[in-house]
View 1: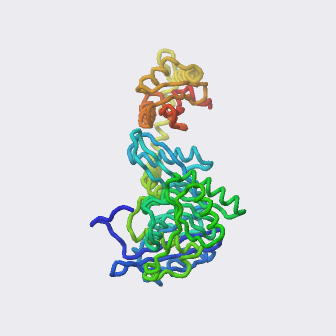
View 2: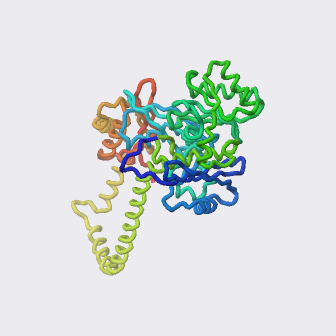
View 3: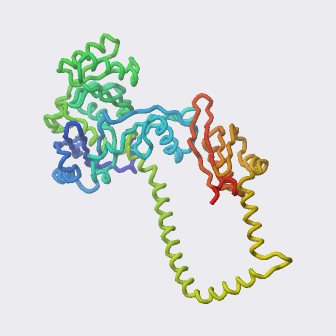
Length: 462
């Protein structure tokens, strides 16, 4: 978690909700900071079928929450997929677009079908990025409550704070294994920040233990301490024995009875229900801002683009109004225009140097037809050459009536966008489109394709 500053608002209370769609249940929790510095917890079980928004608002009213009470929602860990990306050096404003493009390339869904959250670490050559991705329809159960959320996170994101508050001797960095109603949770924490999570379904015990081993090897080094909770079931006891034999540092979390009683935790906190996860998320909201995954990041990143689209709509609406006024004016001058058209017809019928206006127009149409089937290749190459600014061109494809396509490589995304902009400003070039820019991890080059129209050559015959 980020350290609190004097200028940062720390709420006196916060609420959270976790939903298990497969189980048909939701858990709400609220945390209130007491004058002595301690916390008081309250919890409730909700029914998603009855609408989450209304039930959550009633729960908040019961615990005395105000309109400024931050609300966090946790998405099921089983619905979240994590990716590791390497990003080139780029301004912070451009990173969301790069993250969305690379995530879309590695996932079977387009970016507009996903909620994305990410954590960034600067490197000598750019950024290391861990991305959490979830389908947009995974948030359907939240309903209209989505508009009131302060954060949308994995449901286990607050468990680091939870176990430090209510258990003894928790390591600063650890891997949590928790048996809960939907499976075995694996969540890695660095301080209070969750960096990875997964759910392993509980099926046949040998298969479950094998999947847990594979998942642990993928997300944590063997030197990382492993904390189990609870350890009273045969499955968790067998997991403890297996991990100890494999060389992991395993410890069972010991509840701090005094802290639990002081906070007023309900009986469900020690069960496999997700009440503990909801309480952890409320503690995350009470602590202020965080460095963890927040799926509202992608929405906030898209907000400036949405504002730009709204501004374009307003401009189009203004243009439409102006167009209507112009039509009214044209109608008012219809009679005068009709007289002028008659005069123009007479002038077109007259000849100058043996050429009529009709003949001149026919010659112009012929030149345009020739331009459609004949390409001045040298002029095209000069146009591209004057725009490329050091880019390495791989191929150029052209065919009459179709857009010209070229493939090239660049040292970075800024060079690609600069080339696209310069080419679009050339005389005769229009409709420049950037297609599928991809970073080659081996060469560090960005490969891309551009297509554009060039004079009449690429335009289809009418």
